[in-house]
Image 1 (tube, rainbow, N blue to C red):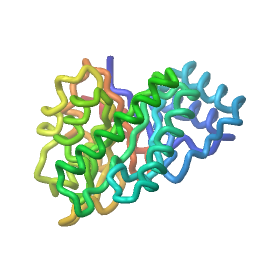
Image 2 (cartoon, helix red, strand yellow):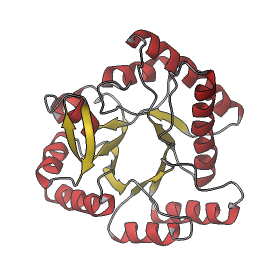
Image 3 (cartoon, helix red, strand yellow):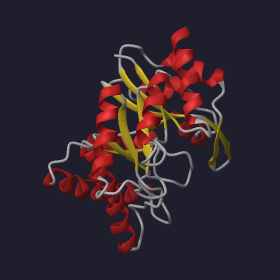
Image 4 (cartoon, helix red, strand yellow):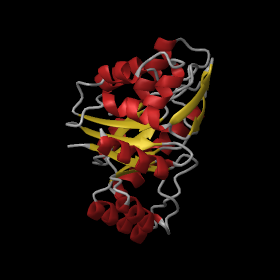
Length: 261
């Protein structure tokens, strides 16, 4: 048991296997495939999917998926909700074929709705997607993510309530929570809320924020990496995905820092 470090992003289908080999040489043991602008690995690419899956297994790199950004499970427009669910389920379908273990997604926006109504809507749609996952006998899990903007659904408490009430998985983004609290919440306080879980899937990077929360991701300062890694236990299965502008470099840097602690 240990922390698996890895980048957000696998690159294009053609260079995917060589990228995994490159990550492995750096000592990285995780990778989140970014479908953020669309599910770019297609079902018909069976040969490539098999090669990626087998390379990840051989190199002991744990794969996860980030679903497209254009998702809102709390829209007033039924069409937008259906499109959102379709994008998440398509990510699940390809993720299952790739051997990925979960699909991370931003659940939605409050809009003009109250927080409780927003929560109930999102919970309902997660349960509907879980039925579809079960029907298809997929093992992949849904992982709603803690978000960094104040007006976006995804406080740690909201995500953990979803986990409790729907049995979904989750993604704890330390950088997002830092931005959402404008630096007031410490990594220790964030971790305390999830320490009872046997495994954790997390995101981390440097981050800029303002009064509305997250503005942009930035390179991850070594001081922040040290601060976080001192809080995380070494005897728990934790995946830590870096989402900075240089995710591979910052993942390798995080691993180097980890080895010195």
